[in-house]
Every structure is written in structure tokens, then in C-alpha cells.
Length: 315
Image (cartoon, rainbow, N blue to C red):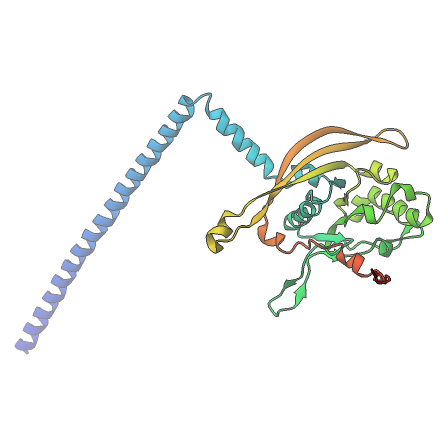
């Protein structure tokens, strides 16, 4: 029994010593960690204070030069608001330019830009985009093709627009669709008159933007007087340096579009004038989406025509 008591006593003494040693080690590490945190916090506070004082000193000592930087920042922040740009003001927009000026490309980019902003896409009179592939390899499109006669017949609107999905209507190349010299024809008025009426009630229908693209500087006077903005566009392209680095091939891509935008103000019953012209640059931000722009969107129109059967020429 004495041996057992002695062994038990030694065991308990060892446990007590081991616990005291462990407590000392834990206390030491606690001391190190706590003091490290305190020192780190003080150093961090000192650094932030120095940076704050330095930046304060720099702000005061760079007057008035720092106003250059401030003006640039103000301009950037303003340009970041899409709805502040003339092209995205609620209402109708007439996009004018000669062939190759960039009318259709700028509108397609605007359609995508507005889709990313609102989550809704566009109605278009021609196939503006090439098909994309889903995860199963099936073709799909973002925008909805339509023909005006689906909506407008005999001078009235006969179909409700699906504005849960689409809030923009795009008329590609008005030259091939409407011309002011045809404004006495019933076929012309059957679509133009309800279109003008539809524009008048666009807020009630949930349509934000009407884009009318044309190579003619003007169109039906009733339509022109309902349009809010007149835009003349010119495309800007640049060297694709990244593509050259990766492939060694020369390629030029769209950098953006220069616009001259003016307000359309009715001037009497059969005329209008352009006021407050503004020149601005619309940057191309979606290079990947622009790959799906259908550059031959009018091809289907001409492909559906009967082919010419001429007599073979002989010498």
C-alpha cells in the first residue's frame, strides 16, 4: 500500500508540474499574440494616419492643378450613367448616316447595352444578330424579329407588344420600308399612322426606345415630328493590338462611334427643326457581343426576291 501511495503521489506531482508548465507556455503565447496585435494595430493606425495626412497635404498643395484630375473624374462618372446619354433618352431616335457610317453597329451595341441595364431585349424588323449556342448546342437569339404588319393593319394597332420581354423597337433601314413620298398611299398610312399613335402611347405600353435607322436624312413628316432625337453617326475603328499579340494577324475592331445628336422640335404642321446639337463619343464596351452582329441583316430581304432570268449575251 505504501508503494501505491508513493506512486500515486509522484503521479499527481508530475501532473501538477505538467499543468503548470503548460499554463506558462499558454500564457507566454497569449502574451506574444496579444502584444503583437496591439503593436500591429498601432503600426496600422500610424500608417493610415500618415497616409491621410500625406493625402491631405497633397490635396492642398496641388491646388489648382488637382482640378484637372477632378474634372476628368466628374466626366467619367457622368459618362458611366447610360441613361444620361442622348441615345438612351426615353422616346424615338432617328439614326442617320451614309452606308458604312456605323448606324446598325451602333444601334446593335445600344440594344445590348440597354438589355444589360434593364434585363429586356428588342423587337427588330430584320435579323440583327447571328445565332448563339446554348449548352446543348442549340441556336438561340436574344432579340425578337417582327414585321410591322404583325402589329399594325388598316391604320390601327392590332397586337399588344410583349413588354415583359422587350422594351425597344428597332426599324432597320427605313429607306426600304417607308418613304415620305408614299404618304398618300393607303399601304403606307396603314402602318405609319398606328406607329405614330403607338409612339404617343409608348409609356402606357412599356416601350422605352424606338430606333429608326436610315440612309435618308428625313422620313415621313408625322413620324419625324414624333421623334425626340436626331443622330448622325460616324464609326471609329482601331488596331486590335491584343489580337495581333496572340495571332500575329492584323485586325481592326470597333472602338466606338462619334455622334452628333440634336433635339427634334416640330416647326408648324409640316416641318421640324434640329436644336441643341451635341457631339459625343459612344464607346464600344462589348467586343464579344459585337461578334454576333449580323452585318448582312438585309440579305434575307433580297434573297427572297425571284432571281433574274436574263437572256444570255452573245457576241
